[in-house]
Length: 288
Image 1: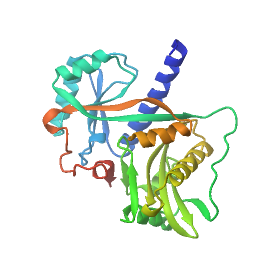
Image 2: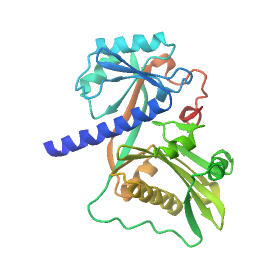
Image 3: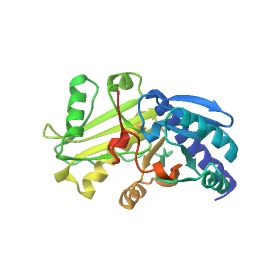
């Protein structure tokens, strides 16, 4: 990777970092500067994605001493000690400092990125009888949540941005969120959610009827999500590629591997959020 490519890669990673941090703050987390780190903390939710220490914006290096100061502040707030950052923005010596503080890898989520191309993109091919609709009313959103909570649907969530229950209409009004419903002959077959921030879009979650879980349908819903994000003005779309199967699918859609979101935490507390069941769905949903 040459210098220009490295510069572009870091710019992309910083945009992703800004998107996620702002989403966490929009969910009610607070941000407190302590030395060269920021302490992100949510007063009522113990979700690991809302309670962590992270290097200050645009810092190239943070010492273990500065990280420890942030961890002390997080501990005072009654949260497990945790550092969360975008891998690719900091040198390997930073990880060494975390290990010296007796922190271990808690989670590493690969990130896949799609950048808007100059040439127009060919729209997704949608099978006959299938329609997509944006949920913009209370009634539409009730259908969205019906699918999400129904046991007949498989649900997938990003583990880097929680799915918020309770402020959908507000987020839609301020153009921070898009909720799509896929219908077949007026029956909801799948849903998906995108969040928007300053030209970037994140596919946060989707759910699909279990009978429909086939590669071609998985491709259709993601292709449509990509089209929707581009039509909304996003020039950078990112997703969490948590399995090799997902990553292969996204690569086939011209997404590229772009680092990871990494979390380091106290070894004795790294498996379970306080008061939150140790499963991906519980750890990725914030109820307001």
